[in-house]
Image: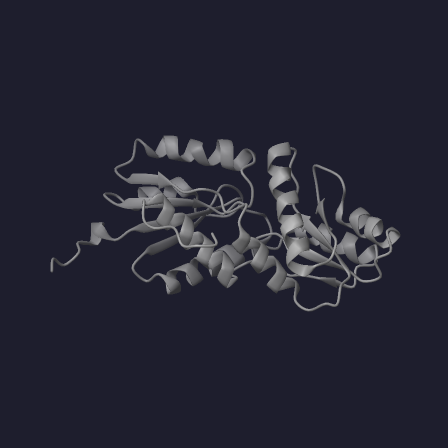
Length: 243
């Protein structure tokens, strides 16, 4: 059997939005470590479009002669997925690397499973699925799909809410469910990492009477599996079920 050269090792570059909040970068690094542990044959790097470093192009420049899969750590195909990350791939065409762009993470049943597990057994009779928010109507439709899937998963009403850019806000969604008769409303988190908008969602939900709030997905096992599924799909291998 031929011994693989260093350049034969697949490189996986995770691309997060980035935040001024250091907790966000820490969560992304933790996810990169989890993917690395699950797939030791891959060389896994974290990168950020804004605020934190390194930037995706800086990581790509450090991988000459390599096959690289770029994985957007985005839950919707909104502006960053449609514009910013394809721009990175276009600029990378001038570099001595072979770059393949994977799909964004959402929508996926695995994300719904991870969100439900993060929420845990709260005894809630209704749930708000809080997301960062976007002006992109198609992207919001995927969040509403996730809310419907979470509702089916938990067998309780679930309303999608947004910390910015679109109504309803998480607090308003909690109030809406309480007005409809819910007594114990939980807030599920459609966030990969903590940050300002996650904090806004938590604060407004609790102020409106939510009895429990979930942590972001972070390095949840479901996210690790989903990242791997996106990598394998991008390299043309068999896509695992439930992705």
